[in-house]
Amino acid sequence: MTLMARAFGIMLMLMAETMTGYAQSDCFTYADNGNTITGLTDKGKAAKGLIIPSTVTSVNSRAFQDANSNLKNLIIDDGNPTFQSNLFGGRTNTLTKINMGSGMSVDNMHSLLLSLGSRGNLVTVEIEGYSGGNISWNDNSINNILTSNVNVVLPAAQVASQTFGNAKVYGHFTIEKEIISFCGNVTFQDVDNGSNMLFYVVDKLEDQRIHIQRVQYIAAGKGVLIHKTASTTGSVSLPRINNTYGTDASLYSSNMLVGVTADTPIEAVDGDKTNLVLKDGAFHPTSGGTIKANKAYLQIPTTQLPAGARLEISFPGEEMGLGSLTTNPSPNGEDWYDLSGRHLSGKPSAKGIYMNNGKKYVIK
Image 1 (cartoon, rainbow, N blue to C red):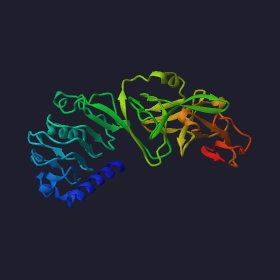
Image 2: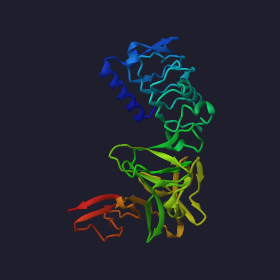
Image 3: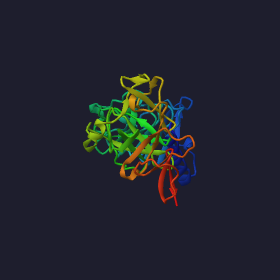
Image 4: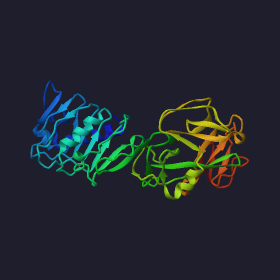
């Protein structure tokens, strides 16, 4: 289970304990040595949020049917329980959010949704950490559950083009490092507008510098750089859209990032271009190897790449969607640029904001 999912589960557990003074483990009635949930205790009926322990292998029909239950949030831990039909016994269920752990199979995800029945107020279905194959929930039996009012949120790398009933589909992006590369199977729109992360393509090479440009659409099959702007782990869910990217089309036509959606072997060179891979915030020439699925690498014309150069990434003026990658940082650390990308002869003395080896400095 991902860190975010655990944090959300802990929050719900603490909420229940604060309001009622009991632990989540007291919320269920069990059979089969605790492997099967048969119903709710009085404490479970009062809980707004429940976490199904990883030891549970099945949940019986009508387990949540009690009319006094007002359950809003259901979290599946690292287990993979099956759900019998009619979980709420035909009454209108009160769930607004389901968080499915990484251990659940597609079949058991499907059985959980079907067990809810069509009478309910479900708003969000989150699937945390899933890394299996495509999830297909496109059948008539689920259309009345996953209505147009429901949001299905998947790890961005796992979002494919298939439908999920009538629900709206979002890709969840998480970035702990300052910068990573990404390539997905579908197109997303950056409606977050930089609150947590920004997305870039490498659009041109000029004066031995690589220019980057911000994009509002993370295009299917195209490589992008993701820059974390939040002080902690960047995290955002973005909507999947049709495979178009509007005003960003010209930037993608000159994009020098090559994205892959499956593990892909690459060589050191590809024709007249040198391949560089992202490591520790910089692009380095590769001697060959495999690019992992949903990542991107950079291709530079070999004749324009200084021998042994690495490309340090900086993001000056990113509020304007500008930036640059600079080659051959000086060994003494005095490799200064102003926010327009002009290389300076040494450390500046004038007041202003400058870049040095990929970091931003303020001279006062």
